[in-house]
Image 1 (tube, helix red, strand yellow):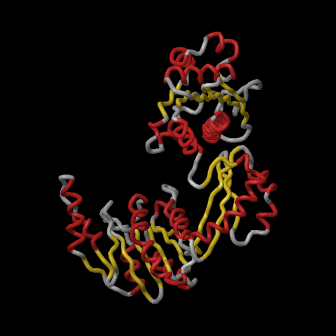
Image 2 (cartoon, one colour; image 1 turned 180 degrees about the vertical axis):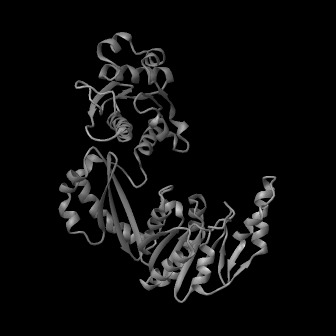
Length: 417
């Protein structure tokens, strides 16, 4: 099946929000063997939306998924554009009106009249229910083209796809279904170019599975994707290629699929029944944020102490004035005492600390922007390492520092278990 994703919303074109819906849908469609051939974004404009639909049809698409433009305001024109394109009328669904009204009644409010616009249904379309919002979706077929109208907010769009749209697409594929399986290998401590050199022949001779490297801030990922008649067969095709890659760059692989650095830290700490705290200076709580994004992290994470000013490093973490005077806050000596102080203050098995110069100001010839010290304190002592990131802005340096701190902890946890 050939699919196109059409996002409707002037706010996307103006860069006010990112089109994360297209990324999500492309990933999910690939999982069930539906190829995405084009992404298109149009503003809240009737003519451009209908023209985009015609272009998709002319290019041979048989599935178009539209996101956005299903709200209650005058610029929400997706319903009208699709109805015009397929030559069908719109009707008001009393059932949907009452459903929307119940949302407002529950909150003790009266439903605005313009919300009735969201109850307009294209003739012959199947309604896709939206228990998380007031904009129902729709599915209809026209001249061999399968059209899905989904709400723009990701918290509404994603469940609608997973619970309703995916089922319809699998049914449409029928006996000709091709299943795709993917595995991501997550690497740290090696750059994309160095990694690619080591597996260049594997990438060059790829067919099924395909091998695709991706670089993100401070990390590299390799995606292995295979297609077969079943997921089990596709997964089996991945196994020998993954082994070949691990034989060459295995020490840099810290996780697979959704095992981000923070997820891996949680897995290791839970497995060992141990706990963690953090002391952050230049990262300003970023490590704590990354970890607390994980549901259930209170099992192992006690908290992060953001000790930005030297006075707080002294009073909260017990960093000695002599250390600060002799070596400065950005030093190996300070990082060690920060980690030890956090571990003692929180009463945890482990603690990590970060202190550095994130820039753009504050650097000197002796201590330039990008200089960061990271310490890991654990049951068997405290280790510290210096890192220098010459390139990158404040946000990049802080993110690299936070990720490196987590990876340093992973290495200690794996070596000492």
